[in-house]
Length: 195
Image (cartoon, rainbow, N blue to C red; front, side, top):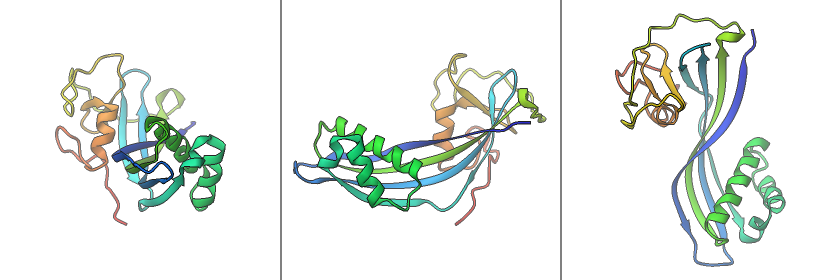
């Protein structure tokens, strides 16, 4: 029985504004929350969200990158490694790539960014690899009850485990950032630990 795990970081910008001084540094204020999401993938049918668990208190990062360091990935990487030495290297690398992307979007001008971010560790349990579970019967659903748009067969959608309600994956991920129940019936999805 093999368990597939992967990690991804999602950024949710709150404000992004160019600064008008060409020689100024770009300022970052990012709150990172770390989660574990347990997903069950049956051989047939939709993936199911078993739950989400917070893996620790949020990390608040405040730093700046002088404009000259945003000119190349290597220069930016060295600067970020210096100012965020206590941050995990994988997270630093993602911040570097995000900073370079934002520098391009601001056309090389310094900027100020405030954002929330999620560092999500996915635990994928696949039926084809020996995982089994008692799955409630699915009810055919044709629309995501969060965004009210149609659920197409070729789109990524997911069902909640206990109540079998289906949603677009991204809609459900945004929903469970702030709520701990199914968006449709309010059945609990997970318990959010307090820190």
